[in-house]
Length: 171
Image (cartoon, rainbow, N blue to C red; front, side, top):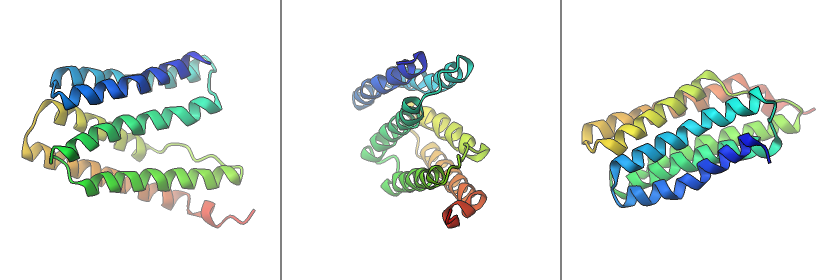
């Protein structure tokens, strides 16, 4: 197992710890764990590319770890009434749709790289969730939720517009 994959696994191990700390409402501890776990996403990617440790296992595990971390936080906010459940459904739908598009592309011998809008969506989501972990305020919750929905929908739309031909490739 590569160092990059071990870093990704560490992120996955931090998720239940984060979840428990959130349920205990230990805001600062939850925030620190969330930030550390989020930072490992950048670290494992850097290590994988810089040290030529890109692997199929890592390509599978890294996005899964990201989604588990984000959805863990979002689900807690749904449980607490700070985020509507439909927001999680929008985010899940986008993730499944983009993953499906990537699978179709891979089956046709193409790779769909992450676009800037997806990176912006991820950054906005992570920063917004950090703010929500630290500050419980209705206006902030509404702003973060709106930013997550807008960036999620835009990035999903962009993936399909830029790669529409993948779905119609009969090759």
